[in-house]
Image (cartoon, rainbow, N blue to C red; front, top):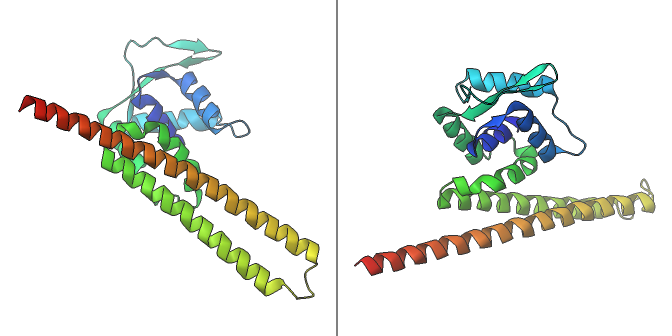
Length: 201
């Protein structure tokens, strides 16, 4: 996740290391924080892999005892960014955390790539909804009338299932809205291109 955040930020232009840290913490906060012990070794690794580079003659600034160097993304880093953006299979259990990180940078992808990611997440949300509804129904039917579970406990379990379902339904509604905007944007762009082409002919 941190690799995607860093490369995404640098796709928009060079940044000081301390700004990368601050923005990353703003993204994952308020309770989760990335430590310098995690971030700076990752920056070093990305630099070693050729994905980012230190800006020669950059406006480095001192932050306490550390020099905040300026980093920029390389061509290989841009390719790695694209690979991470299009990856939907590496972290299926945590993809809900990854997708919102991708959304602000969808515009850097081709229209068909954007739709692919949006459609995948729609399916991802729908799968979670169907699974939670199925598990809720099975739990209720298996448990109701049994003496080993107090009614209060069953009611609490059902409330949790309902909360999970409603959260995924809200997530689904959000990404469907994103897709509608994307389709409208694509169609508008195609219409402008058609008008431009007709005018030239």
